[in-house]
Length: 272
Image (cartoon, rainbow, N blue to C red; front, side):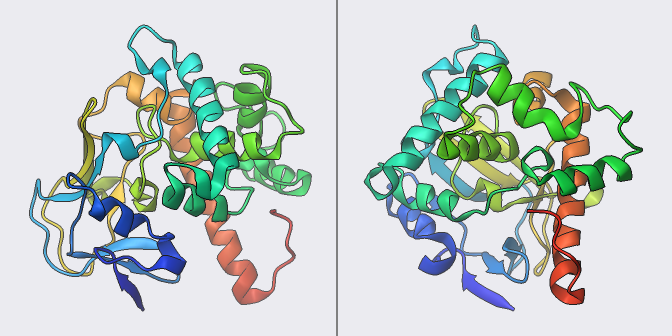
């Protein structure tokens, strides 16, 4: 079921992000894409040829940090970006990124395994081989603790900052929080059909990496993007690196699969 022509947007799905981006003279959302359910993803409603621009987000609409200079460490970029995003989330509708901020605020907590309940963490640890199973830089259920609470000195009592950290871990691209970019789901192999182009200070583009047929879902790759470098991969999940980002993507798919089973089969709700 098609929810909306993504080039027009729909306020109760995207919180006006599409209209906000399209209203900028340098913003662009391709009219050949649509939102569809039951997963809120992006799909092509017409053929999109290789290198055709799908979205172009102007630089001033991207949440970013002054720590993005190349001399900054990946840890500094992560900590600063989380702090910046937390500030905007607290501003809410008063933020200059208000439509995007309202979309991010609507996302439920527990999007990554390290933010799950203790029961959920135990379940995924068993799936991965028990308590001895370790993924760099440690247990996949500890990334939030390692990168935000410990490395950045995050406040466990600040729920908004914690959500900002969780959101950055899952959704940032090359040290940037980009409107609409998080609606492109992760999938590798032939399914990957988009790539990004970042022109520092000007825009973030998502373009077709191959010709996309009508009806295809639009996918990005977190760990096998053809034009990203090691730094960009590592930024994708803080300091966890390529292996952890790949495994986190797998676990996020498991989480989504469990939630679908929970809804359809009335399974016990242990992931929250």
